Image (tube, rainbow, N blue to C red; front, side):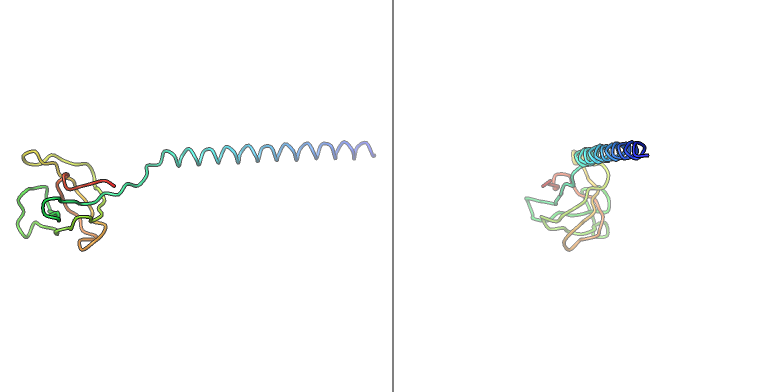
Length: 122
């Protein structure tokens, strides 16, 4: 009877060691996986409006140079934080336009189009 108990205790110890080894291996694998995923997730970049000439950027309802009062969304001061919406498009003449969502300032929450030359990345 003692031999059976001894054998069972040895088997129990081996089984526990194997389980701890598996737990350690799985934990290490998951930690490596999380690190790898975090590395490839794009970092959030901050974009701001900046108009050197006049200190504010006109945000239009459409990607056009000329804008009457009823086609203006707002006049956003330089430094206004924005979120880029979609890809830039070519407009009239040589100007490219970017649709944006205003994230700060007096125009916060509004959407519109601005010339890409008035966007800076920080």
